[in-house]
Image 1 (cartoon, rainbow, N blue to C red):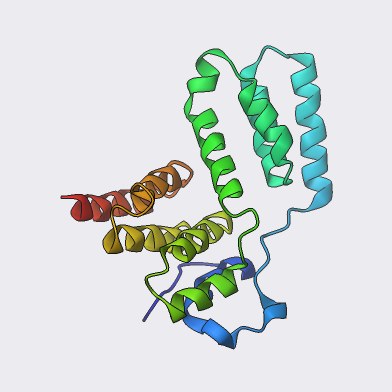
Image 2 (cartoon, rainbow, N blue to C red):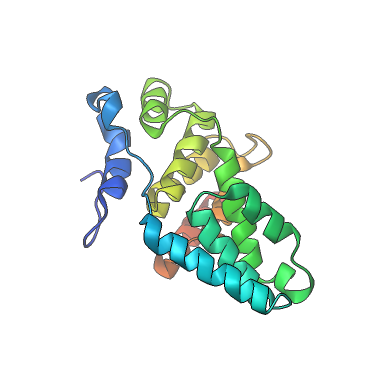
Length: 196
């Protein structure tokens, strides 16, 4: 077995998992798309959160919740404005750090080739660390941190000095935005084994 998953997964996550193993077998028109939230639910949630912020403008928690919902809707510029406007303890809190890391990942793949093209580039040249980094970020944003972690660990294995230790730095940020505690713990041990 090369890969696998437990339980029900969305189609986009399964496609992302299969990409590195399919190479040219995946037609361009079937490249995985990021999951699209249901517009009405997300729009309603954003409207409700905007109302909360308007009612209690000094409550940073409401701004964080609004920023998280807006990030799900792809409103990156507005999320950045909210995060940059946070002050006090909320600006230094875990939720704000997670949002900053998520924004960094969104920026990392702006203008990047689609995941299938990156997978083909890695098949052609396994030492293409730039493609590995972008493919890992694509996987992370598609909800597959396990696949993302593999790419970032492989960057560390191949060249610790690449882009000022990009593999390790990205892996740390990826663990910050990943809620799967078991996966994060196992990955920390693997990262430590590469470091020492």
